[in-house]
Length: 146
Image (cartoon, rainbow, N blue to C red; front, side):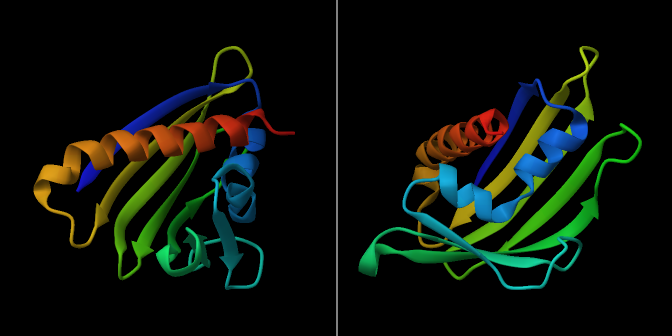
């Protein structure tokens, strides 16, 4: 199990950061060797299901996720969503929060608890560090994009 928290400052408004971070197919643009398929009709909300397929050929795996909480920002206030990872290989959850910042931008908090089945407890540290690095890069790239 790897539990980590990322915090990022964004020049975008709360709504702008929210839109960038919760546009699930966009994640494939910033995570190498990954495709994202949304399996439920738009708009995104509680119950939305999507699958991130990562890897190459026989080394690829599906990471199905379901949105279990959907609280988009309203009137400049904060927004929050929670995803449950429902895969056979990767399980856990992620929460993304976007808060207003004093400078007119926003502050992002991304919490994630990820478990890779079959990995021994000794792998928790390297898993946490690699997941923090990968998701941190993804968040940075999503927040930079227009």
